[in-house]
Amino acid sequence: MLKDALLPNLVQTTEGVPALIHGGPFANIAHGCNSVLATKMALALSDWTITEAGFGFDLGAEKFFDIKCKGAGLDTSAVVLVATCRALKSHGGVDKADLNKLNLEAVQKGLPNLDRHVENIKQFCEPPIVCLNRFEGDFSEEIEEVRKHCENILQVPFAVSNVFEEGGVGGMDLAEKVILHSEKNIQPFCPLYDWNEDVKTKIWKVANKMYGADKIKYTPKAERDLRSIEKLGYQNLPVCIAKTPASLSDNPKLRGRPENFTVTVREILIAAGAGFLIPLTGDILRMPGLPKVPQAELIDLRGKDITGLR
Image: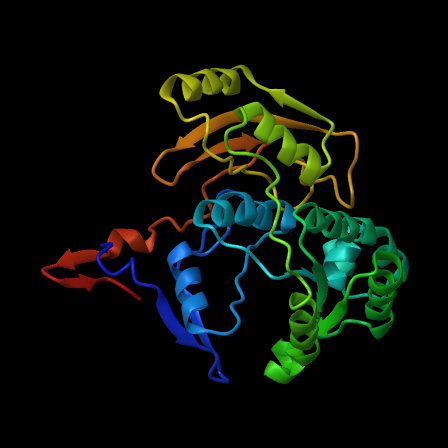
């Protein structure tokens, strides 16, 4: 089943831009990055390599730096933080059904969440660029509110991406600012923690510096897991924290920029083959939704031929 899986998939956009697709783990329950193999291949074949570390900077990007980049010896020239007016309004307290309505006040209330992500990028000593991903029906007044905040308050480059509607032309402003900003960056990234620190210290640094937590609570099960990790000699692995993507905290109902909250670690799993520890926080479930009969049950290997693929 895995005989071809080691090879990255080469695809192209409708405008002929090559893309290597290899690995797609969710950042709320895994590391949220594509494979090191695909990234290094892209770096060897292109002048510019863009890779995604998804589900917010507090999840995918933190793991991208502290696990992938640290482990593979990679470094970035810049970080593009993707924001949307809809997400900002959601963090500003607007219900999903009302996100398509003009609401400058909600955008303003949601901006502290954006501020936190920008601050988190700077903790890695990387230059941030804010990209607003434009949706059909977005209001120019809301976009300008975000632009003014980024350029005047945060003092970071800002660009609107409209590639869904306009194709590559809709991303030219962003591309030009990324190139200009990247060429000014000569400083390597700074990891958030040292792999050789004890497990609780590593979890604390992520929870405190990335999420903004002021306390961590360990369940009896998590404490037993910590003792097992020490006994088995896995204490020097990095941590890949499983957490809700809906909030900076481990509680999906805490929107915006929550403060004075406690992160609960209920269990810590050892992913020895992958090379990291997985602390489970809050009520996060690691199993994504699957149909009653998943496609995996229909796949088979007959000789050298794989059958049952769609």
